[in-house]
Image 1 (cartoon, rainbow over the protein chains, first blue to last red):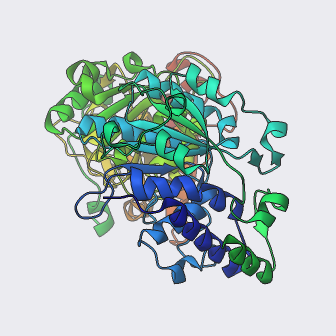
Image 2: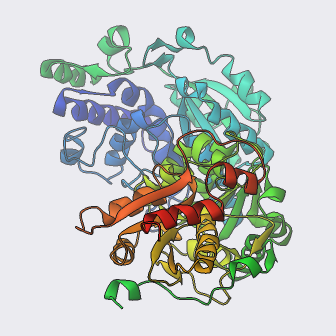
Length: 282
Length: 327
């Protein structure tokens, strides 16, 4: 089966993100727009579904504030209706800005940053013990790497030889107080994860070809993947080493105005500005 | 006997001064549970030998996960294991579980509905070190966590029963545990029921309420008082949450004053819970709280610490005697 046009899927996810923010005029739009591409690949190509439609592979969102991107992706996958997603952040809505475990599609409670990779390690150990063959993908942000627990988790992932675990680092160079590189640099992030025993690579988080190469579908043997230039091919991951993919992302990606002027942790805008942003997506 | 009093269990209890010691009851129970339940796994942060889980690790190496000296990561891993269908028992010292990894216990283990057990060793004053190792605040912290079951067993029988109950609790459990040789006061077999109080000893002159080791200390005081002609009843509250407030209020209704005894700060655990249970009932019952005062305790062996803090049998008996009007 041919993959859906993932660039188009990502655009639809972005449209949902902006519509969600428009409901209350505010939200974590920058993160949602930045993650649309990788989430499109994970949920519409990489993660395997059982015959009943449920996902065999697991996605752990460690960066709770980026829930907007996951909600929008789950909406695109049919788990949420857009009318409900439009209530994002409103009193009484289950479409919370940072939801708890148990909200459909959310595996863990993640709003307190730095805790997701540990739970992903636990899931990877559990799935291996069960012999399910499931893979675990965990999305973290660069600012989150400042939390020490992330490195405890990284150490344990390689120690326990978790070849079924992939850490995805949203390297957007943005955190609450400003630019990550100025607040507390997390670089050289590739070398750091490599030193902790991960097969690590850095890619453009908006390059669909790069995402396709870095995140091969588990359902397809590598021979079935499209041919690639040899120099771009990532090293074959060892079976017993966890992987880390550093995604260079741009907050607000897809809306030129946001990319230029709104690289901020949280966005509040007039209604007209949200409408203009949606129009700018094309 | 009132309806409330019948709510308390009445197991056979040995003389507190002549209780036999049982070697590593937690270890024995965990190996038994491991044979019965393939879903039960243990996560340890470098203290396996000191938290009585080494026998489980040897018996079930596939279901034992060593994470090194990293308690926050351990609680997260336990949460991940719970979400893949396993029942994790995370073992460490009580101070590390509730202070260093307190947030991870709450977020990874307690915001969902899956069963996960934190087995917390070195409860209260049972360590020669001071503030770094004395867990005198753990019960208060865990009691405030929504949905958390909090258990402080009194002896070997209860500890073995409590870990069995915990792995079937249907939610998160914080279980204080003792290692090595543990006195066996309650004659086995005795079922442990989460949420049930235990009437260890009856008497009409004074009331003591204990939890954990504090219940042993209350029994010692009751024995001394009996020698002086004061018959004291001892109600044991192993489950601090959910609290059997009815049984506690029913017990308090029998006395003008009750004395609470706990291996913990007087703030936030048993003493506070009894005050909460009694307040609002209209009972004319004073609550005298005995435990670690609001300061860092000194270092030393347990009997020295108890004397220093007024928790030895003689001091407790004195307190109870005063509460009865000096009879």
